[in-house]
Amino acid sequence: MIDRLLRRFERSVDPYGDIDDGAEERRVGALPPLPSDANAFIWHFTREAKWPFLGLLVTGGLTGGVDALLYAAVGWVVDALGSSPPQTFFREQWPLLVSLAVLTLVVRTAVLFAASVLEQQIVTPSLFNRIRWQSYRRLMDQPYTFFQNDFAGRIAQKVQQVGEATGDFIVTTLQTFWSFVTFALLAVAILGAMDPWMGAILAVWALGYVWIVRNLLPRIRRAGRETADARSLMSGRVVDSFTNILAVKLFDPGRRQDAFVLDGFRRFVDAMRRMTRAITAVRTAVAVLNGFMMTAIAALVLHSWSSGSASGGDVATALGLVLRLNQMSGWMMFNINGLVRNYGTVQDAVATVSVPPVLTDRPDAPPLVSKGGGVEFRGVGFHYGKGSGVIEGFDLAIRPGEKVGLVGRSGAGKTTLVNLLLRLYDLEHGRILVDGQDIAAVTQTSLRAQIGVVTQDTSLFHRSIRDNIAYGRPDATEGEIVAAARRADALQFIEGVRDPNGRAGFDAYVGERGVKLSGGQRQRIAIARVFLKNAPILVLDEATSALDSEVEAAIQDNLAAMMEGKTVIAIAHRLSTIASLDRLVVIDAGRIVEEGTHAELIRRGGLYASLWRRQSGGFLTDAAE
Image 1: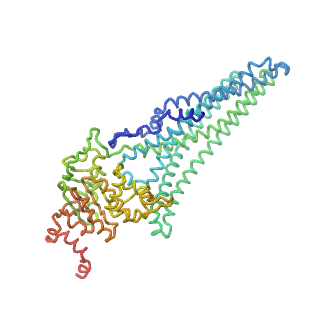
Image 2: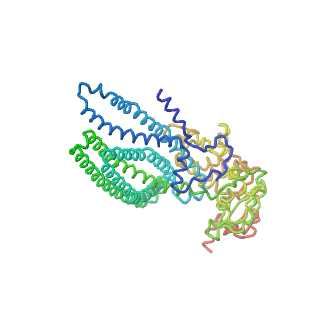
Image 3: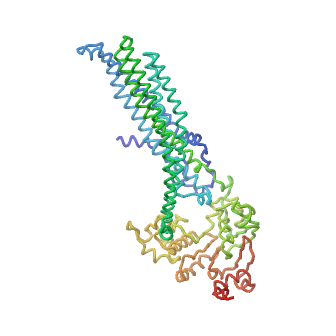
């Protein structure tokens, strides 16, 4: 029964907020960016769950009020014990006792239950996740370069941290901090009613507390931000080590990687020590302040009792309240430390998760309409922001269904052209048209849906082989998936794969980035994925580079079948694999220097002929000459 009741509350806040269920396509950049200022970021998510947070504000105040009344009640009971003999105590004091029982058993329990439900059933599971999810969604709109320039583990750490830090900051402020403020205000009112001097002492104590918060806590906030950043850096370096474990094993016998990661740990420890020094200073200041407050109040109330102006109940109330204030202020300072650290974490995280994406779809961008797969580069210039170099004034028209090979030395700009066609980068000059439509004017999702890509660096998801093959076409049938694997000459090895959990064949998981498979096996999975996608434009960037000659020969006929009727752009350093294409375009320093068929280019004796000679046994001849 209690579970059913709690489940009702759990549905009060949507834990996601912007899921595209049923949407065929989402425009990149359509989601508004999250606020880049920490205060605005916190306020943004506070408004997304305003009613639960208003409830926390109310229950936080009631919790502090109930606690203050209970300590005041101790004094009332002490005075009642002195005014009524034991024989008639319950008969004379029953209204007070019943009121206290109701306050303790009913009101206090109801307030604590409501506070727990609001925090544990509504805010923590739903809002924390909402912040993480919406941060993740914005990051997924970032361009390819964003992820090239940072550690994946560091970015993931910030997504995890920002949800918890933001939620904890709001909950602590509205419940814990507000409860303490309410208790302190009522304590001042109660003690001030007994003796204005006691109220004045507590007012001075409160001002001292505010001074500590204003002058000492900023050090913790700065240190908290530095610690959060150092923690993310440390996590990023650890994940980077694990991700590239084979390179570490093969090339790092001197454990240079350990030194690199150790530097990250040292930065984190140094930042943590700066923060803990600041925390110790604050705790010491609070201890001194509380010591003076308790001593002064105790001396004053005992003096009043000895002079007959205060009752025993007043002494009990005053001492109980100041002892509780001492306990709560130390606990509250710990929570304020947490508040400041969380605020620093939010500041650090929003610098990453709130960056507006620079490569977005136009608000009115239509989807690309496929009309055969023609591709045209018009005056394309791209320099990776350096002002010159890479691609300059590039013009190339590829007819629908034409098979074109891009040839050139390493660094000539071949892969960059492919990345520009896929709009992984925005052009600096010129235009790229697909079927006469400017790729900058259509949605990125629809553009990439028309292009099948096999790259030389194949990375798979840690999911089943079936899921990896069907990634570009999740509605594919089992028969279609198997047929694609067969055409990629992958079926035989897939049937023999088994993972540590006993899953076999198409159900087997391939490990992070596909590490459980060989390079050639990963490449064949990628080729099967493109077979299944069946897009009108096919990009092969060293598609068979990881295959041995025997396997490559086995799938060449299938690759030829896959290219039938499609526009093909193929990049290969092994020129024999693209020599039979309709046209070869030779690129050097980002410009076209030759184009024609294989036979025509050989007869011209230019750059292509030179590259061909070197791959056809010319190395020894060139060396001899």
